Image 1 (spheres, rainbow, N blue to C red):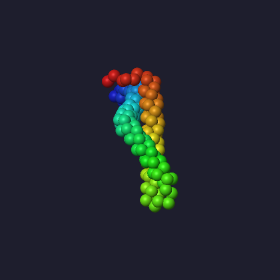
Image 2 (image 1 turned 135 degrees about the vertical axis):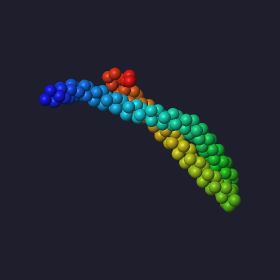
Image 3 (image 1 turned 120 degrees about the vertical axis):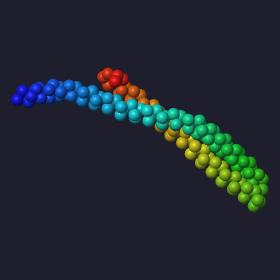
Amino acid sequence: MAALGLLMSMQVSAQVVSKDSISTLKLQKQAIRISKDLNERKIKLARLENEMTAITQLVDKTAQQAQVSADDNGTAADRLTTDALDKKKARKASNAAGDAQRDAKKARKAADNLESLSKDIESLKSAIADDERKLAAIPGYPFAD
């Protein structure tokens, strides 16, 4: 009978400590989840920032090519105006116009990709800041083992 009373008193005191431990463990679990998300976002941000250089160069290259094609188209059109019935000049002007249209589309697409990438980077930076604020709000973070 005394052993049963001792066992029950140990169980009651263990529950009080257990509730504190559980709340601490829940906070640690939350902090780990937020830290994991934060690290994944930082890795993705670094990858996107590395892509930014390549995409910026692509935008510059496609814009230059579009300008060259537009200039070639203008030249071909000017040549056609001197002799509007010349089939060879008409074909060259038509081809130059198609090239200019295609290159302008590529340049617009590259610029759109750059804009989208910039928005993704800003969104990630905002999410990282939010995660860092969440971690700072957790009492006792960083936890000592």
